[in-house]
Each structure stands twice: as C-alpha cells, then as structure tokens.
Image: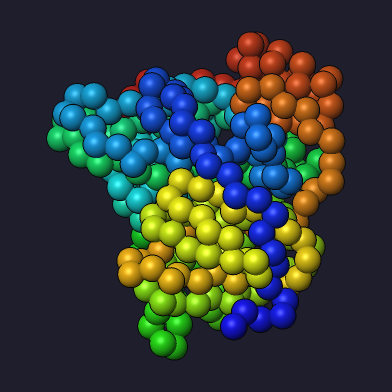
Length: 298
C-alpha cells in the first residue's frame, strides 16, 4: 500500500529520438514540442544505448556553454572531456561529471581513443540544470566522482538499491554540492519491490525509465523503457512499484523551481535577450577562450 504523501503522476512522455553532436544517437524526453522544459531543468539526453563498431564512435566537438550546469552520468563506454579552462578528464562506466559552466567555457566531449579503436556499447545521460540569476556568471568549476566514489545504499529487504548522485536517498547523502537544491538518484527495484521515497513538497520531480517497467505515483501509472514520468505537485513523496518479473532501473530527478525568466539560444541560457546577445558576442570575440591543442599549455 502506498503512503498517504505519495504524489500522483501528471503525465507520461515517451522520449523523442534525435541526433546530436557529430551524429550520436539520443533519446530526449525534453525539451520537445510536448514538454519544453521542467524548471529548474533545461534538458535531459539519454545517449544510446547503442553498439558502436571500431572507428565509428561519435561525440560533441568544441562547443560553448554559459549560464547553466551539465551533469554527465556514464553507464557504458568511455568519454574524454577537455575545455578552454584547461580542464581535461575521462569518464568511464559509473562515473559522474558535474560541470558548472557559469560565465562560459568551450567544451569538448568525445569518445576516448581507446574506445574509438575497440568499439562497444555507449550509454549515458546528460542533464542540464539551470543556474539562478545570482550564479549565472560564476567562475566555471567541475565536480567529478569516479564510480566508486558515488554513495550507494540498499533497502533492508535488499529489493531496492540506489546510487545517490545528488540529494539523499535511503538515509545516504550525495557528495556533490549543487547551486540550487537538487536530487538526482539512480534506483534499481527488484521484482515485486516497492519504493516509498520522500521528496520536498516544493520540488518539481520526474522519473526516467532506463530499463524495465513499473507503476509510478499514487495513481500507479505504467511507464516503460525510454519514458519519462512527471509527478504532480501534491504530496511530499513518490511511490514506485515493480510488479514485473524483471528489475526496474530508473532515474529520479527533482529540484526546487527557480521561477525566473529563461532566455535560451543554443548552448546559452540567461535571463534576458540582452544577456543572450552578449553571450554570443563574447563567444565570437573569443572571450570564452579556446581549447588548447593536445599537449599544449592552457
């Protein structure tokens, strides 16, 4: 039986399929014509899952960002990140990179050379989180956690497990510091498992089904792989039930709405059209820097 504070489901959306970057496959629940955004979130992309033959892996070459954060969570494959701030890193399965673009960076996200050579499965997620007006032009920063450094927990009956990227779940807190209150959690429910999970009453909350199917919310709406569940705002928790004979894997993501105007043009997210024009001018004038050639100084 679900708890009395469980939220109903407002709607279930099926992710649209698209191509991004240099041509990699993406499942995108928003923004689409069905759902423009989800304050304070701007975009969720599921990269793959896809099998890549040797020499054919694609990524996102040099591109700018300003005014928001990107959260990259890799499930399979291997990606390399470089930017105009001199940052360089590698993501392997289970790793998380939380990049705060702030005042602006030029960023490159490409499959590693080793993955390019051997091929294999590529699968991961990228979430765009809006920054509040006061933090739009903050100094860019990174928070990176290897798979082993992401806190995890399991329910007493062993049927529910979670990786806690942001927020708190099953009594376990994340290590990531966010600029606005956020929860980002990867749950796995075994067959016949029930999750009653508290969430702040003032949060916008959604779930995205990675694999399997389950019943979500007080109204037990069915959602399957590549579908997004948007919860209503009534109540201080969500209920998820797995009545199937296979595990259910899903992301639970929520955040406190900023309630601020959003001006958006490609990879720039500000509060006014004037700020967008300035971002474009700064990028064109090279004021966001450039990614140095491999092996050179930043």
